[in-house]
Image 1: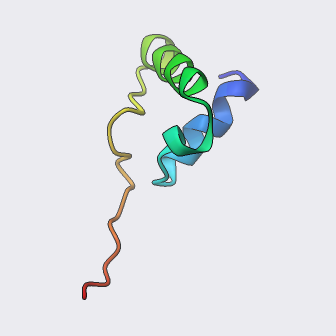
Image 2: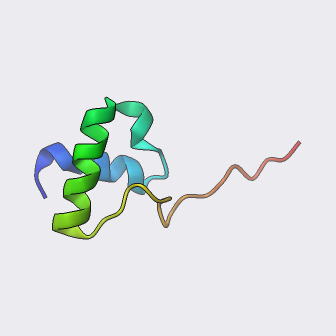
Image 3: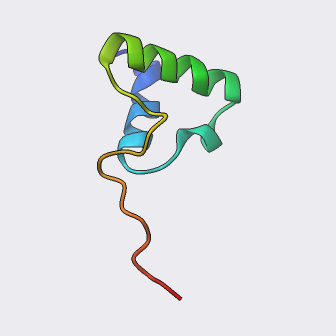
Length: 56
């Protein structure tokens, strides 16, 4: 995986939405490339995503 996609992938894997960390164009370009070349769908929640356990 190229370095330019690695940061996006790791951000998503840790449970953060990379959509809010980059331009819209970059997000969709990275999402498309990760999906077609690597089978990673960052438009869905990460399998490691855990919602905040604190409730009010």
